[in-house]
Figure (tube, rainbow, N blue to C red):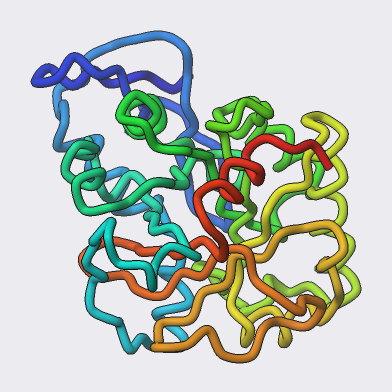
Length: 288
């Protein structure tokens, strides 16, 4: 079975692989376990696993589409021009233990934390990131990096739900998000037709909705979505669109407006919620 590594410096229990692992896309990808042990490699081993198996949100979009990163936006509470949007970030295992007080001071008010990828990887820093952001005052949620050719949408939605991807209408929890982007292991569309990809996404979405009474947000780029899906989910799923430019540009097929825009990856993935703070709280409160 897999083991859990202990970060001796911070006392954080984090997951990693030891003797066995799941096969994902032809390679071994570690899964979390619920027993603790301290490997000889310690923290360095955990970080190597993150670097090898953790695909951060937008990493494949930037790889295939490039990026014209916008400079970080400064925060001024007196600036009325930014009152109709809310600044946020997203993080994965690559960020390790995050200094949440710092990002709060930079004006960030919401965050999505990577929880899972496929059905064989969980973010070893998830607890520090998810709970630490909440304790700082962030409205936070979890996201799942989808591998649609490895298992069904329902299977991955349930795995995500059971490993940090749950939702509650407490005004502090964002709906779970499915990260739909280029395949890091091979064919752009995971070898699926548009119809098959549409069915996979619907399977994930409906399973998540049945479990939490909330549709997940869909993170994607216009180019990938139009090439690999081309179907409309705008009536049910909020759009989190990636475009690294000065404007959001043309939206993916099926949406007439976006809920969140990821506009930069420097110095961290940066997002803008399309509405004022009170609307963000509604987004984290209302059932569908």
